[in-house]
Length: 128
Length: 208
Image (cartoon, rainbow over all chains, first blue to last red):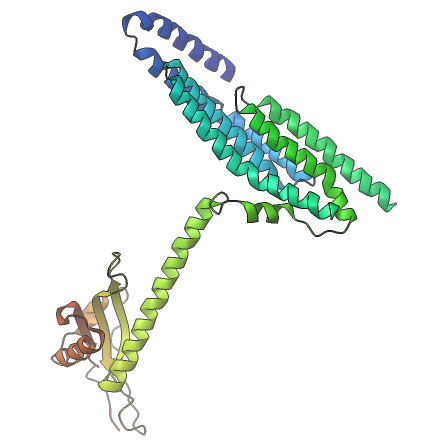
């Protein structure tokens, strides 16, 4: 059972962090980083199944597929950014977390702008 | 019936899109970036709703193409592009080397009694001297074309050996020096960077 593995990994990590916080204050960050990565690796297989289902659904309708994969890409980027920012925040580095988020926002905008412009072009074409 | 099937496919697109979006919303992370994802999803919804009008007005509009035109060049398929450039570079290099060999063939055949069978060229790949010949190995054999055309030459076929190193069948000769000098003068390569191997014919040739 995947879910039991994931939950127990999380609980063990939490207990470890609570215990270690008093003795070695620098350890909890590493443990949370490793736990995050571990859980992510565990769900990777299932995630690919979900994504595949979504993409086969998207292919069935008239939506241009590049479009939908852009959304998936953006969601993936958002997850990675959140992961990094959360770790920085846990370590007390609010400013670095903000910068990571800024980077994520800019990169997401880079992906979104072409779609926005294309849509504008379509609307202008229809109206003219 | 055209109108009904048109509306039918339009509705189908919208319904499936909303199902997709609700799933996408489920896997969306919480936090500041959510609104950016929503923005893109909103654009997708607008596109799905208005795209039938483009067809109605018979506009030739391909979203993929336009998005691709507006996108930063490396946003899409960056790995493919890199591969493509690598392949292109290799092709250019191959053409360049073939061209040099062809040139050498003409040069050797017109100025000496030998003809070029094969050649190995190593070129420099650093920034400043890119493309300069680093080392040249040529495999030559005596040219038969200069002799009397009425004569029929029968070459003795020796034991056929497979997978032997080509080098063994070619010998270095005193004629080397003159050919080396010729190539060295025309290409500006140092003489010790040229290696020439000449194939000598078997003893069994019969001249009639």
